[in-house]
Each structure stands twice: as structure tokens, then as C-alpha cells.
Length: 436
Ligand code: EPZ
Image (cartoon, rainbow, N blue to C red):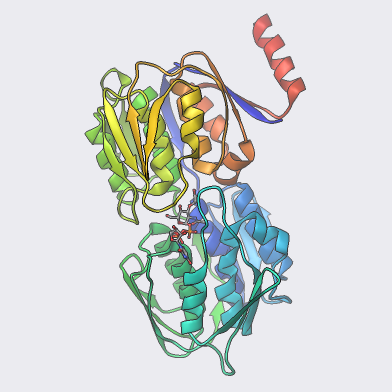
């Protein structure tokens, strides 16, 4: 069983470079299906399980996909299916965003309903409602949703999203680029990843305006072609290193980061007592006094408010704050699974409704803990860096979905952290370090 071993209490120092954004590259790979002519070349593609999954999904639909280190070349001229493999969609709900490109280019899409995950039920009703507003019909049968465009293709329409859903905005935006006439998406999700997707769509020949605001206008075009695009940095990966640097750092420079994308997090870190230096290509963080944050009240919400994907990491850091903090999760129904694991490390946390109340303590103690989802895994690694003694983190398949070489990057900052794929390796390493 793969695990990460961490010897806590060692300061982090130096420079770490952030990879391309998982949550931008996934819809960008899906959007490549829209290109009826020419090839797409995507740069700054992180090596993640989820990215591989999406690449396999579009390949299974007939696209040629070639990896070159951290870039991917895609030729979608010969797509021959509108039904992505069930297992691939079940494994990663983000695959559902191939629905829009397939439906608008081929008039049909048959996709497994993704179902819920550990952090919440996560329905796709707003995706389907939006695609129906463009004229599609939908039937749910045998665990699949079958979407069909009217004769003559999708038609532009005005769509108000009940929730500024990131995924629904992406699916509707991609479907609308080949629809007849204009589409207006109101209460759209404003995340930087959606702006990055819109920039890529426009490079492919689309006419998308207003991405990043809550009103997006798309004027349909007749054909889309391949394009070259470099993916934005991963603001959540950057945030993970900044939180670690605020409590265990001695001057950590997080390179390849866009501070505008994480202003809400930066504001909270400064409120907690960290010093943030915004530089051209990155952010330097200096630790809070005594490496213990001042207590905070944090509430997650839709961009540009505090991101839910940075909730767990902040909870971990606040476990050793100088007082009582509250963290309220408003986006997902069940995103406090990391709390029970942090309590195993001695944390004093109780949940009241959708709020975690965290009484800061002097120190955490190392323990054997298990990741329950991607960001919970990152929180446990941060807790392990803070804790006294050794922490053993399991459930690494969650981490591998969204962090590109997390252990290697923390090692480069001086952390005493290592990853072992199985028993032998652990025994071998223990023998080695005992000998050292
Ligand atoms: C994206 O998920 C991200 N994933 C998530 O990151 C992130 O947490 C989330 O946006 C919110 O920021 C990717 O980009 C691949 P939503 P998405 O649709 O698009 C409800 C990570 O850690 N909703 O904006 O699935 C939904 O249940 C992941 O990297 C409906 O009710 O999120 C949720 O409560 C985890 N009906 C809320 O809206 C719908 O049709 C926001 O979901 C769609 C969503």
C-alpha cells in the first residue's frame, strides 16, 4: 500500500514551481474535441491521474493524443464515437464536460451519469438544463444520459444558472460555440479556469466574450480548428504551498503563480499574520509569528470568494493557531472528512452544521491517517509537516489525481518527507535511515 512518511517540524525554505492547472486543462482537453480541422497543442500540462483519464477519454472517442513531456498534441479530426467509456466517466466526474463539445459538433452525446463523490451528491442537472435550453433533448436510461440536438443543430439562447457552477458554465459555453446565433449565460462561474478555457476556445475560432464576469456572451461560428495554448498555473497547488509556508516556512517562494487568482487566500494569510510578497512571476511567503496563525473566520464560496478547494488545507494550519477559528463550507455538503483524521493527530475540532470550530493547540502529534479526497490529502500532508514525530499518510490515489510530484516539491523545500509504493520499500528505507 503506497504511503507518504513525514517527519514533522522541519522548516521549509527555497523555491517551488507550480504546474499547470488541473481544473483548466481538463475542460481544455475536452474542448479539443470541437476541432474539425487541424491539431491542438497544449502546453504546461501537469502529470496527474485525472489528466491521463481525460486524455484516455478523448482518445477512446477517436482523437489522436500524443504526450511530449508536459505538453499534449491532439488531432480530433476523426472522432468516431459520442459515447465515452463508462468506466472512465465513473472514475472522474469532470469527464462529463465532453457532453457539450460532442453534442454541438455531432448532434448527440451519450454519457454515463457521474453520480456523487465523497464531498457531496454533485448532480449535473444544471448542465443538462443548460444544454436543453440550447434546443437539445435528454433522456436518462440505464445510468446514461442521452442528449440529442434538433435537426439543424443547437440554437443560441439566454440561460440563467441557479448556481454559478464551474462545470455547467464550461459545458454550455463549449456547446454554444457552434450553436446558431447568440447564447448568453447569466450568473456564470467566474473562475480563472473558465477564462483560460474561453481563451483557448477563441484561439480555436470561437467568439466568446465576458468570461470571468457573471455574464458570458457566445456568438456561434460554423467551424472550430486546432490551436496552441499554454495552461494557466494551478492556483490551488500554489495555495497549498503558501499555507504550508505560512506555518512551517522560513521564506518560501512559490514560482509560476498569478496572485490575482488567489486574492481571497492571500488576504486570509495576511490576516493570520503571514507576510506575502507579490513578485512578477510568483509569491514569497514569510511565516506567521511563532509559526502559529492568528485565529480566523473563513467562509468558502464561489470565485472570487475563498475557494472550497483551499478549505481543508486552511483547517489543518488553523489546528495550531493562537485561538479559536471557524471555517464554514458553503459549496459542498460533505467536505469535512479530513476533520476526523486531524483529530487522530490531536486536533481540537468540532462541527456545527456546515462550520468547523477549531480550537488552536500548541502542537499536533504524528499519526497514521488516510486521505478521503484530493484536498483532504493535501491537508494531512500539511498537518504531518507541522506535527511532532512521524505521520503516515495513506489513500494516495486521491492525491495523485490533483498534485504533480507533491512529495518531490516538498523535499525540494527541505521537508523530511518520502513516498513508498509498498512494504519492501518502507523496510528498505527504514533499514537505510537506521544505518545512516
Ligand atoms: C469544479 O467542480 C472543480 N473541479 C472542483 O474542484 C471545485 O471544488 C468546484 O468546481 C467548485 O469550485 C473541476 O474543475 C474539475 P460546480 P464542479 O459545478 O464543476 C452544485 C478539486 O479539488 N451543482 O461549480 O463539479 C454542486 O453540487 C475539485 O480540484 C448542482 O447542484 O463544481 C456544488 O454544490 C473538487 N448542479 C456546486 O453546485 C449542477 O448541475 C458547485 O459545483 C452542477 C453543480
